[in-house]
Length: 192
Image 1 (cartoon, rainbow, N blue to C red):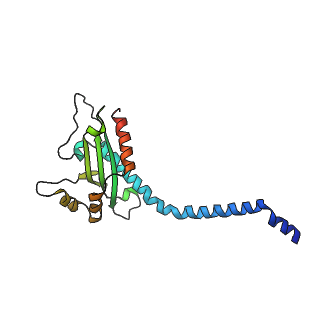
Image 2 (spheres, one colour; image 1 turned 135 degrees about the horizontal axis):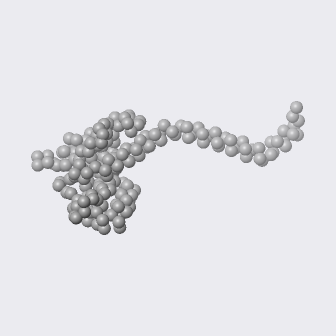
Image 3 (cartoon, helix red, strand yellow; image 1 turned 90 degrees about the horizontal axis):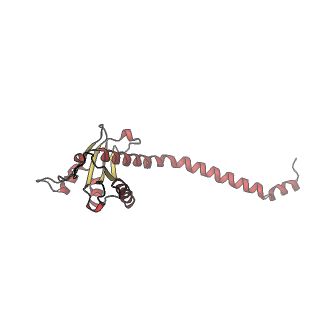
């Protein structure tokens, strides 16, 4: 049996209370981490989509996402210069997709620079604009939004993009962090 005096001594022991507090904090942390995991998955999916878009655009021939007839000047070398892209995802379909394999279409923005040796970013050939990637094909299909002789750019954008993404595409391009990362990768590829 525990006497009243031994219980009072235990109660006053600071070490025991420190252990009790640490166990309570640990239990609370475990609960919060387990609760946060379902919310972390879409962010991971978003990162996977960004990586897939960037890789697809950088590995594609610039003619596949060429704009207004721009092309890199090849010069005397037979080797094609690398294309360095930054992307921003506005959204994807189906919106309830939880895995990259479930994503059929991605709506976003791309800004790519052809990294010819010693050519600074400011004078590099660039390919930019809203883009739709068909992820159901291999390799993914790339469709850029461009005006035609009969259709203005903004009208063409509204034809190709769902309304909620078309509104974003008219206002937003790359984030500052994505642009900084792209410039760093471009400079490295161009040997600057």
